[in-house]
Length: 189
Image (cartoon, rainbow, N blue to C red; front, side, top):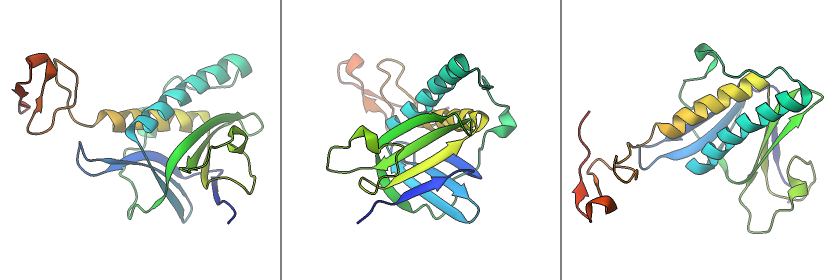
């Protein structure tokens, strides 16, 4: 069966978000354009890495191509609305690709579905019939910076960290290795 590539050239919205309570959250990226919406499931670490790499790519694009890249975005340009519901997972993300389209002056984010076969990197950002399903989103530099800002906030909005061992604290605390196995209880804020 040929692969499905969902392309959003001028998305109305591209955001990271979660479903569930801290400690049990599922992370999604959601692209919306007109009446079309695609949501993909991924790991918290993937969201974090994507956000970080977008920042690095924007710096490189500014340096190498002299593109007008904002260092930050105004607070009112960062989308703070929740994911649109219902959140229906199109696929789970395995491989991520990131690039710069010099013609349109856009950042290109491509997310490929998890597959059991080894992925040839030539499949990323390519329209071949063979390969895993994909979501490809084109973002202006300001849109990419706004996405990265929100993604960092979504990742950081999880459970508080233990001040001793920096591991996440559950509502009931956790067994802290720095306290020789004694249970550290989360203090109310």
